[in-house]
Length: 63
Image (tube, rainbow, N blue to C red; front, side, top):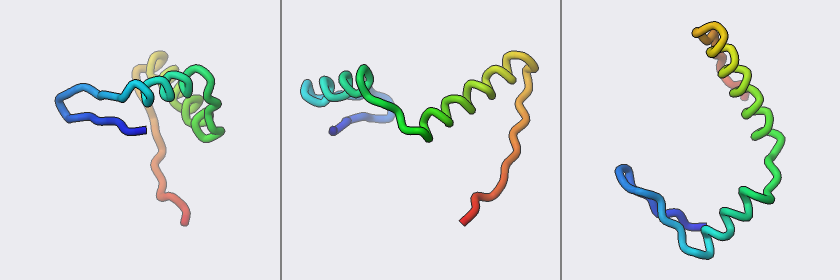
């Protein structure tokens, strides 16, 4: 799928690519990593709404 975008412009898809994208959004199944990431983001958003502060621990990735 080709997406043409510019910093200060819009994103344009061909009609065929737009149909593929729409079908992927409607019928696609997210990967486990995407579900975990969304859950973690929701938890952070909830914490921010409740406390007004986020505490995030940063560590180096293991190799």
